[in-house]
Amino acid sequence: MEYLSKQRYEEITAELKHLINVVYPKVKDNLAEARAQGDLSENAGYREARRIQGKTISRIRFLQKVLEHSRVITPDVLPKDRVCLLSHVEFTNLSTNTRMKFEIVSPHEMDLEAGKISLKSPIGAALMGKKVGEIAEARVPTGTLRLRIESITLD
Image (cartoon, rainbow, N blue to C red; front, side, top):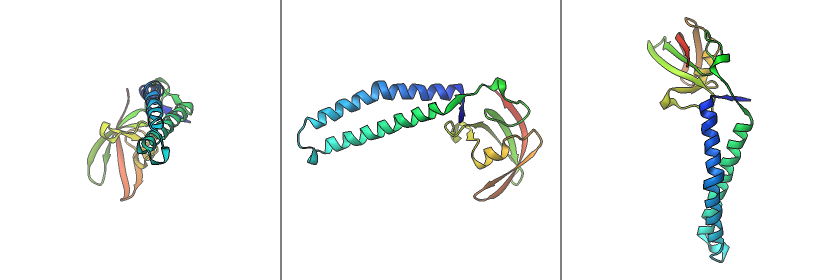
C-alpha cells in the first residue's frame, strides 16, 4: 500500500485519462496506418508504431497499478510533532553544519528539485518518526550522516 497526497493522486489520474483518451487512440491510428502500407517485415514505420504502442500500454498499466494500490492521505490525520509522510522537515547536517529543508513524500512523488524526498530514501527513512531536536542517522553511500531536526510542519 502506498499513500499519496491528493495533488499527486489527481496528477496520476489526469495522466492516465490523457493516455487512455488522447494518446492511445492516436497510437492505434498510427499503427493501423503503418500496417496498411504493406509488407510488415520491412516496414520501419510499423515497427516504430508497435514500439510506441508497447510503451504507451506499459505506462497505462503502471499508472493503473499505482492507483489501485494507493490511498490518498490527508494531513489532518497525521501527527504534527513527529516526522511523517507529507511533513516539511528542516534539519542540520551536523558534520557540515548545513541546513536543509525537504518534504517527505511517497516514492511516486519524489522530486529533489522541488524539495521532495521519498520516505524510503536513506535520509527520509532515517527522519521518519523523529521529533524536533532529535538526531537521525542516515546511512548513505558516502557514510553515515547525523541530522538534527530543527522544525517539522504539515501544510
